[in-house]
Amino acid sequence: MTTDDVLTHEPIAVEPLLALDAYPDCGGLAMFVGTVRDHHEGRSVDRLVYTAHAPMAAKIIREVEAQTREQFGVAYCRVRHRLGELRIGDIAIVCVVRAAHRAEAFEACRHAVDAVKHGAPIWKEEFYTDGSSAFVEGCCIRDDLNESAPHSHASTSHHHA
Image 1 (cartoon, helix red, strand yellow):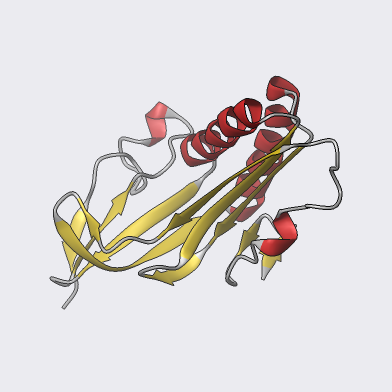
Image 2 (image 1 turned 90 degrees about the vertical axis):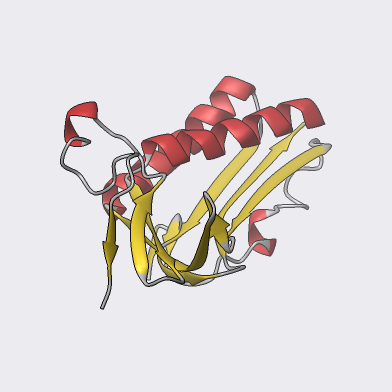
């Protein structure tokens, strides 16, 4: 299932995002691929689950893409994010930027990834090898929601029997 191909429960296909033939005037292509690692803050990670408010997250990602193109003067910016259960090594997020020059492509790519990570309502729950789990590195839409929301930057752990 996809939300306008921005969010998907399926593995992210990187090749279609590269748009190699469509931008002959762009010599810079920057790509970030974020994968699931096996550790976080000294804890051994078994897997993770991404959840989202999908309509809002997709809207924000599309806005980030458009804003990045405008702010950095790049020709192309695409971001895709996985949802659901991911295993170690799975691709969680991909950002591809095409620009006339490498410097703009690099800067725009970093900006877009950071903007999505900090602004889209997508939450990451890590499951650890000791049987516990925690919500980590979630987005913060409004500070007043963070006090009681499981997606605040403060980790909340619980044990699974």
